[in-house]
Image (tube, rainbow, N blue to C red; front, side, top):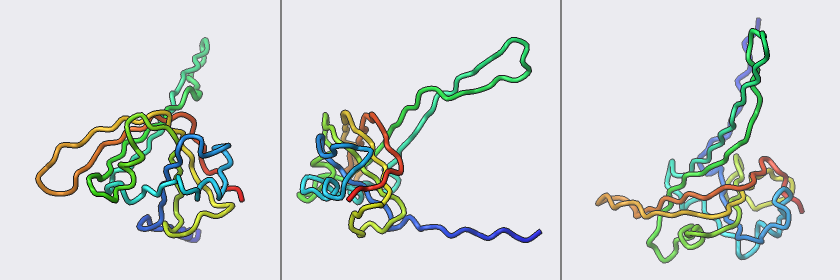
Length: 167
């Protein structure tokens, strides 16, 4: 038996992009366009997040399907809950995320994975689109060193994963 090949991988450093698209900025979140994702109202918020401070989650309920006298219990999918815990910097006149990820805001978080951050948005690129129906924010207590930060907890509605950007 031959040794399997080691697959290549994309390093995370510099290869992630998070955009904030305000409510009404996407006509169809399952088919975002280049024009919609590059509109002047769209903000790049990737580097406003602290390292380890952007944590999406997905929890799918598992339902048991028990049958009379059957020796095994089948499981099926139930409802899925998406979440996001985020920590952003604030306090500078140039803060980007703190000016748009505000209490009560609605819109979309659009994530592009494994492509250099500086690469222009283009048709056929794959993105994840998270509908944000509301946002809760909280200023984190000062520690005496480091940056001032806020915890941002968006309420997530629909999620569209690996959708292609349309020209």
